[in-house]
Amino acid sequence: MAVIFQPDSYTIEVKTSASPAEHWLETQREMLDLLQCEDERVISKRCYYIELLQNMLPDLETAEKMTK
Image 1 (cartoon, rainbow, N blue to C red):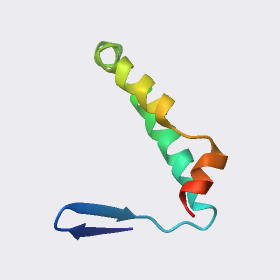
Image 2: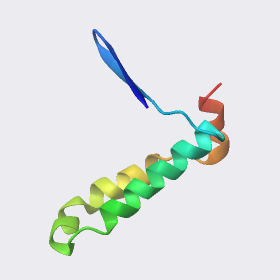
Image 3: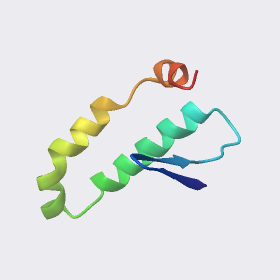
């Protein structure tokens, strides 16, 4: 993994052994799963953010187009 810093941006580069789009989607889903497993008192304040993140995830076909 590498982080590349530019004057007005940064990029996180993660090497994968399979489809980068598929790996990225799986990582996003796993992070959402972790957020949903938090303490109920905490999650009640974040449910809208989690729902937004879930709705922002593209399907695999769209994610693969993003890599081209």
